[in-house]
Each structure stands twice: as C-alpha cells, then as structure tokens.
Length: 216
Ligand code: DX5
Ligand code: ZN
Image (tube, rainbow, N blue to C red; front, side, top):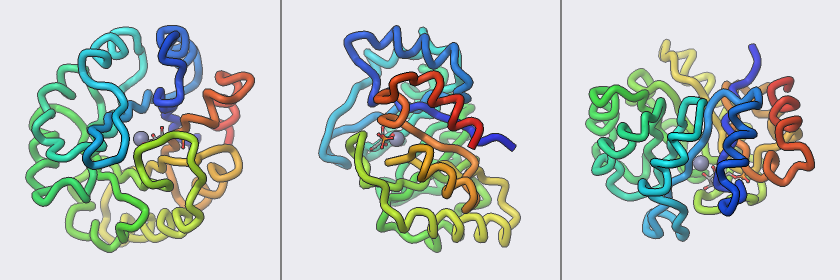
C-alpha cells in the first residue's frame, strides 16, 4: 500500500497560494493539510476561516484540517463549512475529548486526535476505537521547517501495537520534519499517512517530491 501524502500549505508561498494549490491538485497528493493556529495553544498564528474559504474553493483534494487551538469544538461548524474530510483536534486541548470526537462525527467529518511529542501513546487507550486517525506530532507544533524528533519513530511503533491489540481501524499520520529519510522509517514503523511542508515546498520540484514520497 502506498502511503497517503498530505502536503502542508503552511510552507506554501502565501503571495501565490493559488499556484501552489494548483500544483497540489495536479500532483499525486492524497489530501491537503491545513494548519490552523491561535497564538494560545501554540506560539504562532497562521490563517483563519476567511482565508481558508478561498483555499477550500481552489482545492480538489480532501482537506485534512489540523486545529492547533484551544476549544476546537467551538469551530466544528466552520470546519464543516470548508468541506473538510478530517478534523484533527489536539488531545492536550480537549478535556472532554470523547464528546468532541462524537460532535465531529455527528457533523459529518472524520474525527482525528493529535498528540504532542511529550504526550504518551498509552493515553489513547480509551479513545483509539472511536477515531478515524491519530496524528502523531514529530515536532512541537507551531512552525514549519523544524527538526524531526527521533523518538517519534518509536511512538509510531507503539501506536501500531495499540491499534492491533484493540482492533481499532485508526490510521496513523505523522506531522513535522517529515522528508524522504524520516518518511521511510516512519512507514516501516507503521505510519499510513505523512504530512510534509518544508520537504515539499522547499524542493526544487515539489510535484516530483510528492511523487517520491508516494513511492516510499
Ligand atoms: C507544525 C504543523 C505542520 C507543519 C509541518 O505545527 O502542524 O503541519 O506545516 O511542516 P514541516 O513538514 O516543514 O515540518
Ligand atoms: Zn499540521
């Protein structure tokens, strides 16, 4: 099975966003990864719904929306209005995660739970059967172009074991510092989907890089 590739437009050229989105549309990418930050949950602000409305209009691939915000449940209707396929919320931002997961599903989207580098896999034990996907952060969220945290490979292996042990059907996605070198190891460890920002948009041939990632 080829890996699912989800290019993160956080690393795109915002002055020519339409051009970069057209590249993704033409490419072998499976999804488009959209990073929403609030300057509270993470120390950065990216873009909000007024901008994303236009991004969604131009994009032909399913949207993989990653909310790095407090109280993400407040924005379920806005994320739904974008036509999102997946809504990723952080474990660390949701004291009532089970409820939020149900709300996302009721809204007609696929719920995914995201964990920060310091959050153990074991904490997913009681939610793993209810989610479509787990997004493992392999950098501390907030910025593109950061260095991959090595321990993430072990976490992916541990998560794969948890999924098998519990009979969950959850997909495993990894986000942060993913490139051809880290990507191949993540797939060997059991990852299904790779998010990549810098590795794609800083490449000489971004469409070719997406192709190379699909071949990992
Ligand atoms: C970081 C974001 C990532 C980011 C990844 O907080 O969640 O999606 O765009 O960028 P790279 O691939 O450059 O690490
Ligand atoms: Zn992300």
